Every structure is written in C-alpha cells, then in structure tokens.
Image (cartoon, rainbow, N blue to C red):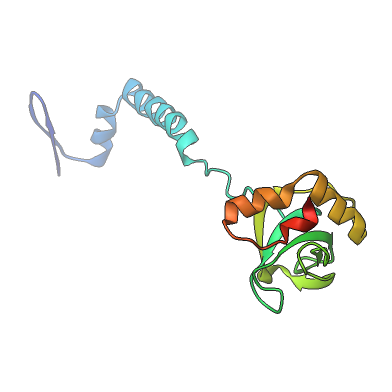
Length: 152
C-alpha cells in the first residue's frame, strides 16, 4: 500500500498500477519539456572553456627551465616528435645554441615570431630583431636576459 499526499488531502493507492493513473500525460510531458529546457539553459555553462592558449609551433618563443641554458630565451625552430623539438637562441642574441630539447624543459611564452621551419640562425635573429619580440618578453619578465646592445 502506498500513501500519496496532495494539497487537498491524502490519497491511498492499493497497488502500483493505480499509481500510474495519477501520472497523467500532461504531467509527464511537462516534466520532460522542463528537463530539456533546464538542460538547454545549463549547456553553455557545462561546456569547458578553452584550456590552452599557447601551442607548440615553429617560431614560439620559450624560456628554458632546465639544463645548461636554464633561464635563457629561445625559439622553436623545428618539431621533431611529440616529445622533442629543435630550439635556437640564436647564440649571438641569447646565448642558446641550436639543440634538441624535450618539451618538459621549456616554458612556452605568448610570443611567436614568423620564421619558416628549420630556419637558419641569421633568419631567426633577424625575425626577432624586426619584430622586437625579445624586448616585449624582457618587459614581461622584468629582467635582462638578453644583451640589449646586440638588438639595437
């Protein structure tokens, strides 16, 4: 036996089959449409925001965070595989020689210079100088990682 309480009193139902009689079609439809409407309202809030804004790409300016070049700026020149890339300072500007480095040793910055894949040292230095990217990064870092007399 099941007891249902409504605003006008208590209704006693002797069997579950009698309970279905109280669930009328309009009530079921109202519940279904209400759930769909509520889901549509919540859907934009449930979608996650963009997780990443910095992507590994040729020309991305990075900060080396481990190894002999720790604390120096470099540029990704080529991507070797999903774990390693070819970086370069170039040595005349930042002191980072061309080397293969795992991504775990790099911190990506917001800055990207326009270079082609496997660009030469002179092209990388020229691109950094023309776009004044290292000056922008120095302002962001607040420290002198690059000899400024070379860039002028």
